[in-house]
Length: 260
Image 1 (cartoon, one colour):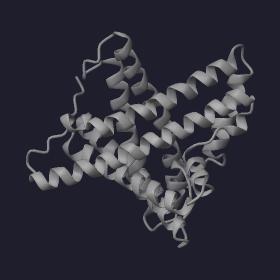
Image 2 (cartoon, rainbow, N blue to C red):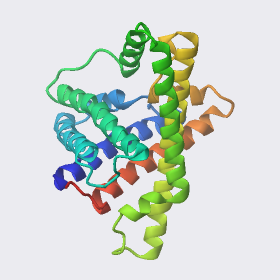
Image 3 (cartoon, rainbow, N blue to C red):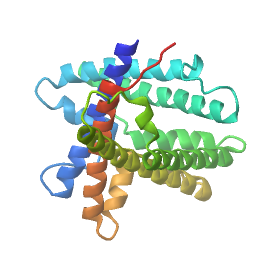
Image 4 (cartoon, rainbow, N blue to C red):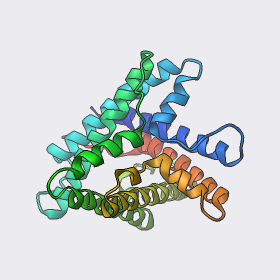
């Protein structure tokens, strides 16, 4: 299970690395694009041996999903059953559910099939369905607020370097440790900003009763390009996503993983 979990971090890191690289290329007009996990998987599929790499990513992400479910249900990290602990374990569960679809997309592309609908279309369809239910707009608004909270939590983690306690870096020099920690902080901060922006989109959808307002990672990147100094902002976010990918690879190599 620990090996599967580490493969999961590698697979997730590869996906976000591709998203960051494509965004960086787009910022400098050298053939990239602002995309999300689906677009990254499609870009990988177009490469030599892309199907093999996608098969690895799908397998690895299954390991990541299992890890999140174990963390949510068995609570090996002893988060407890108080309000904070339940919220953290719920976040693990939701993270696992989210990456089921990414793993499925990777598997479909690996065998030559594909999901014709984009991630934004799927999010908008789900949002529209929820809004049609009693108190649906309130529920969507709560999801948006929770997403923003998750973003600020990541920013807090980056600021306080809480992730450092979970990494076995004692075999590295102090200079190497410092470099990797700074890269990880930058990556976590970028990921936190993405969550905050996505949460804001969800709140706008609830406020305006308009599911079309919901956007994913590609929507965040596109929004950045439309701001003053948009190119510079896109470069910073692209570098942040690449740093986040390196942070995930660091997790795969050095993280203390508890599965029981």
